[in-house]
Amino acid sequence: MDREQSVQHFLDLLKKSRRGNFKIYIGMIAGVGKTYRMLQEAHELLRSGIDVQVGYVETHGRVETEALVEGLPLIPRRRSFYKGKEVEEMDLQAILNIHPEVVIVDELAHTNIEGSKNEKRWQDVSDILEAGISVIPAVNIQHLEGLNEDVQDITGIEIKERIPDSVLEQADEVVHVNREYSKNCMLERNRYLVDHTACLLAVYNGEWRGGTAMTVRYAKKLRREVIILKPV
Image (cartoon, rainbow, N blue to C red):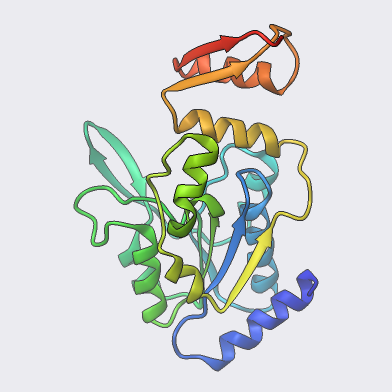
């Protein structure tokens, strides 16, 4: 199914159900284009006359993704102070009050701050769906509960933000975003691993250029412990 057929299929689903429809963009690793594809669909739905609004999106500073946010209605985030600093969260109540036909929700596995109605964002999404609002979220596959042990065995990193496999099973449509290679996807993967660990162990020959060099510099910038093993 190509993208136009996929969008039309989702439009058909919107007309059939009182409960919101649920379409998930899922990727193998960070940087493969989940959020980009999700925002592309939002524009296509908007042009089709659907009331689609952005509940929460994380661009990670990618210029091309930020450009796609422009022109889409944004539901203001909820600002709170947590542990001495201001943080922004998706505003569940605002989404329910505004009640768009479709809402875009990024970072499905996110853990909400203390004091929120729900502990997890996927639980917020469940409330939105029950209110009759369709949701298009994005998530990386390593956040699935059923794959957690496999991911930890491969990477040595425990993924603490998880979603139950049942969330994926409830989706009306799942779009796997992993078929096209992005020149930055491996670097995004490495940065993700650094972001979620306290120590980087790298086989590194000291060259300035290359993915390993960029990852080592990134880890040092974040003040992670870096252990270098010289290749033999």
